[in-house]
Image 1 (tube, rainbow, N blue to C red):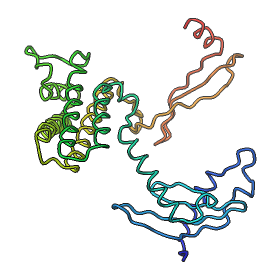
Image 2 (cartoon, rainbow, N blue to C red; image 1 turned 120 degrees about the horizontal axis):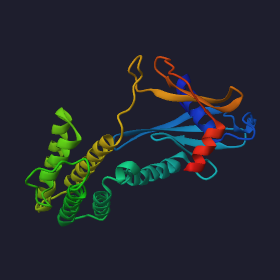
Image 3 (cartoon, helix red, strand yellow; image 1 turned 90 degrees about the vertical axis):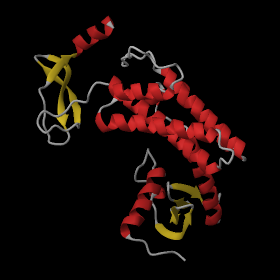
Image 4 (cartoon, helix red, strand yellow; image 1 turned 60 degrees about the vertical axis):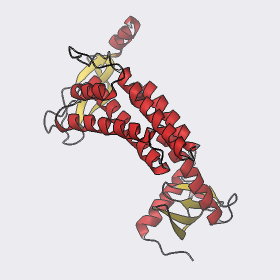
Length: 296
């Protein structure tokens, strides 16, 4: 039996479906407008809540299922419980893919290590016995070792008089943490790398290794690689500019085509989205921009 929906919930589902069905050529197309939204079921599965909505349009009907939200044609899925089963399976596959996704900028800093981490995730997919989970630990250990080797000649690294051995992951991780951060963040980086290494080595030799042990190690390994790669990107980038009036980071460039002294060009200025501050304007004639492009 359909539930009576709060107005904000009904509006959220309506906007989602109309957004997905929008007619670019005719935004007011009546066939893309929702005529009815009703909740038909709710589920709780493995700690996650899902809601199922029956959504009517003039020519179509949809099942909308949340967390994350997706919609399914009722022509393809006449029963909502079948659509829900498909939705859960699809979300599991998406979550698996996201587990090995990493931002491109970060991937450049941990490329070799991340490929080994992906191999550990792939090994986990087929793991069934204790020795399989030990194998996952070995691959996580290899990923950490690869990261330790990747930056031993980095420009941002100051080497001590006595260098660490090539495969001394803990030693290199500590050096990296000292160069990449300060204060508590430096200590945090050093500690998570130290503990992740200890767990990997311990699980590698644990004849009673379980699925949950391997899952935790995978998450710990990914976290180390993500945190260090973020720190490296931060060091390589210039510090973000701040508003001279309110110190906000929300500085953007506002510009438009205009004419000055008989010449057309581009007029721009920095604007703060937080306090409204507008910096000095700069004007660049088209002719100068074209000359610069030719020089390039």
